[in-house]
Amino acid sequence: MALTAVPLSTQLLGWDAVELWVGNARAVAAFLSAGFGFHVTAYAGPETGCPDTASYVLEQGRIRFVVTAALVPDSPIAAHVREHGDGVRDVAFAVSDAAAAYERAVSHGAPGVEEPHEVKDAYGVLRLATIATYGETRHTFVDRSSYAGVYRPGFEGEKLPPEPVLGPPTGLDVIDHVVGNVEQGSLERWVDFYRSVLGFERLRHFDDSQISTEYSALMSTVVWDGSSIVLPLNEPAEGRRKSQIQEYLETYRGPGVQHIALRTENIVGAVSALRQRGVRFLEAPASYYEDARARLGHLDLPWDDVARLGILVDEEPDGWLLQVFTETLTDRPTLFLEIIQRGGAKGFGAGNFQALFQAFEREQARRGHL
Image (tube, rainbow, N blue to C red; front, side, top):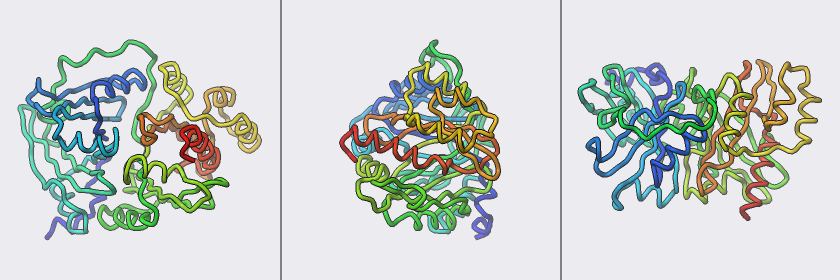
C-alpha cells in the first residue's frame, strides 16, 4: 500500500492536545485556569449535544489541554478514573494526513483504536484516527487543515465558565516534552515501538548510574520526531528501596504519562507568577545552590532569583537550561508538571537528576512509600 511507504515523521506537524480523563472536569479546568493561567476556550457537554461527558479545552500560548469527565457511571471514562485516578488519556499529534499516518503506524505494528474518520459541523471537516501505546494511553492523529472551529464538533466557545481574575500572567508557551513511565524491563520494547511504528529517533539515554541515589534508580530513553515532539520514557531500576517510577506504576496501576514539561522564555517570571497563584514546587536543598554557583557561576543568570524561586540550573555543550517541577497535581502521586526555559541546551537537566531524585524521595518518605 502506497500510504505505508511515507515516513510518519514527515507527516507530523507537532503537538495537537493532551487530554486528561478526570473525575470532575469543571474542578480541574478551574484549577488549571486559576493556578497556571490557562484560558477556557471551548466546552462540550449536555448543553452542546454531548449528554454523557463534560469537556473543557484550556489554552495558553501554543499549549492545549483538554479535561474530560464522565456524566454517567457506566462510561469508560469513569472506569478509567476508578482504576488510575485523574490522568492523561490521549497525547494527540497534529498531522497533515490522519488516514496516511494511521495506515503507516498500523502497518508497522501499532494497535489501531479508531480507524480514520471524519467529524463535521458548520466550521468544516476534522479528520481523526487513533492508535494505542503504553498502558491505556492513546495517540490521536488530528488533521485540522479543513476545520476552523474552536476545537472539534460538539464544542462551543461561548457561555464558558467565568475566568478567574486572580494572579498575573504566567507566560507558558509550548509543550516541551511529555514523559511516560513503563514497567521494568519494557523500556527497550517501547523505544523500538516509537522508532519502528512512528519513525522516531533515539535522542538520549540515561542509565541507572546517571539517575540514582543510594536508595533508588531509574533508566530513561528519549525519543523524538526530529523536530518538536519529544517523548522521554522511564522504567524503574533495581535499588535498595522503591523508586518514584515504581511508586507511580503501583499507584497509577500501570504505565502512563508521568509529567508534561511546559516551556517558557522567562522562567523567573513564570515561576514567580505561579507561586503567587498558589502552585507548589518540589524544593531543592540550600546546598544545591552553593554547588550550582561554584560549578556554573560563569553563566549570566539571575542567581538570586533562581535560588529564591527554587529553580534548577544545568549546562550542556550547546547551552544551559533552567527547570522546576511541581508537586503532583492529583490526589494519587502520579501526574505533575515541569516548567523549563532553554538557553540553547537540548537536554533534560542531567546535572540535576541527583537533586531532583532526592526531592522525589523526600516526598515519597512523607507518603510512607519510599
